[in-house]
Image (cartoon, rainbow, N blue to C red):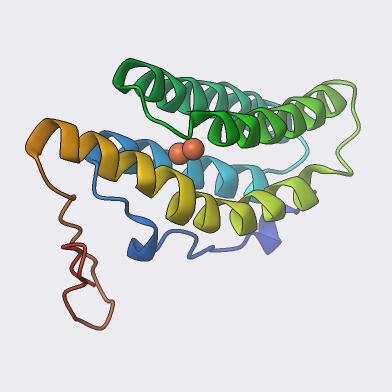
Length: 158
Ligand SMILES: [Fe+2]
Ligand SMILES: [Fe+2]
């Protein structure tokens, strides 16, 4: 694991990953913070950080799957399948850490940071648009800080 003296300051989150549905965006930011906490954890901290990440990942995915079910979202099978695969990986590494094996932690966390932006862009944003359209009759308006500006056709401000 990373010794405390070498801890990284990950600029993990950026507003390109906002989907425009606030409850989902808030959960996603916490998800990123928890991945960074895992990456920065030393040997004494890594099990607790992994347990927190695993529990939050489960809650995050269950929340989105509940929204999909409640609103009749059409393409929920592939979204839920991706969640299940990711949660299985997180749970597997968490169980390894509980047994004292931390060798897979860094690669898992880095893989999550790499995986998430595309998942948010393709699957979560589709769900966010679906829910905003049902509730408000239109696509979400997304205000992104520090990203060069134009207004996209879908009503998203970049
Ligand atoms: Fe998500
Ligand atoms: Fe998702």
